[in-house]
Image (cartoon, rainbow, N blue to C red):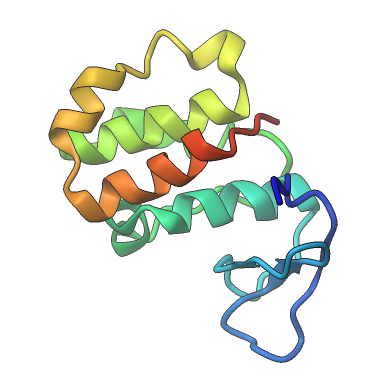
Length: 127
């Protein structure tokens, strides 16, 4: 099944995972913050990268990238910067595609940070 995870429901059985796909059951680790669906989906993507989750990066409670793109201007490691650029590219590939450098990112990321990217490549989605 090639699910796009577009049918989100609250995952009330596990408060550490705020939502899941009703079609395939895939669980997103997006915390318990009640926000709109695009923000939840973007936070789940952020949380899938261990380097960003460890840093505590948050999308914000709005359906835009104003708060998150501020991370481009702080002292991130090159791998963290690449992950932030990737997340922004998923949000708006017309604006941020040039910031995300695939070869650079893949060579910088550890295996556990390559895995969320590989999952996205297998089933890409954009906002």
